[in-house]
Amino acid sequence: QVQLVESGGGLVQAGGSLRLSCAASGRTFSSYAMGWFRQAPGKEREFVATTTWSGARTYYTDSVKGRFTISRDNAKNTVYLQMNSLKPEDTAVYYCACAADRGLRVTAAEYSYWGQGTQVTVSS
Image (tube, rainbow, N blue to C red; front, side):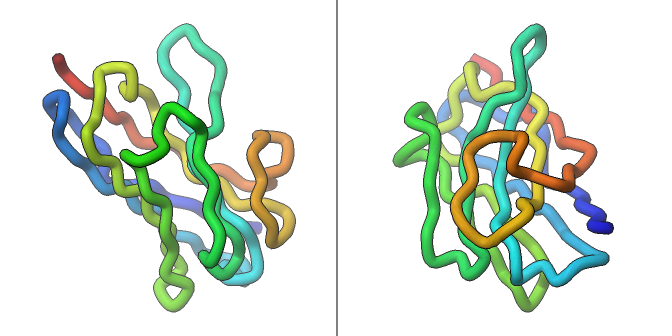
């Protein structure tokens, strides 16, 4: 079992920044890929970013490339999502997830464990 707890969400003006954190426990965190997803009201959950078990490789959905950065600190069992130049369309509940293996993973079905989510609201 893995427990994931997100934090760092909140209300920010367009153009601002937030850093989300996801603390993991209960599993060998450093052995598995991690990802961030988001879900806006009335929409399906969508992939945002993923990183491999070591953090050496990352991948992003096109809409956040150049603005968001995923990183991880395996010593702290924590994955981060730095979000810059935020836009109103980034408003959503953001979820972190732990994959079943080490490589980059972009679909929700490839993730075994999920956090409870943290709300990000970007005002115009």
